[in-house]
Image 1 (cartoon, rainbow, N blue to C red):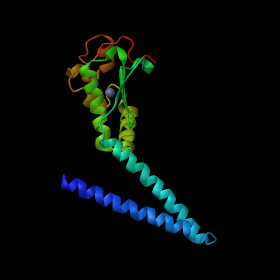
Image 2: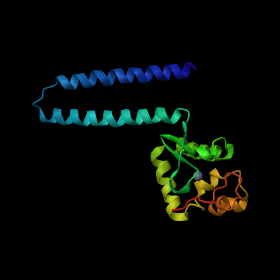
Image 3: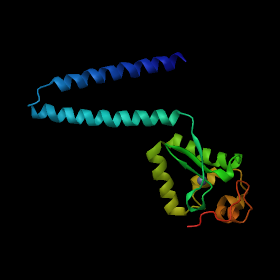
Image 4: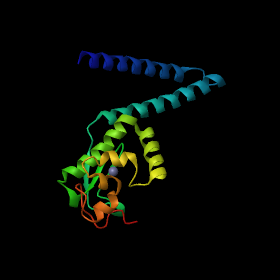
Length: 170
Ligand SMILES: [Zn+2]
């Protein structure tokens, strides 16, 4: 706990230093070209840093689950980092489906947003949806057959997680 407080103090001290520096730059001679460039660069870096800081805050927060009227392409649920987990209202109360999406959320927390997206789409292109290793990881409670043939299992009511004849209808 004390470590956390010390870290917060450190962050605050850093922020204070940054704000002071920004004021200093604003006061600096506006006609000095190199100073102007440094100012712009610093503002851009501050903006990127602040965005990453906010995103990181979001990463550590508890995930938000939204129950929606309909999902695209017959999906039952989707984890859309950093926004939250979206689940079709029809499947509200389905613990297995929620756990599936939570595995995706954990993958996002472990990798960070950028690496999560790169990895997921790389696997998606290389292996396809049914054999995507990150999807297989999320199907931990399915049988070995359904882990690799998930679309078939969900469509035909064999999957433990969810049954949906319109699953992935594009
Ligand atoms: Zn999934």
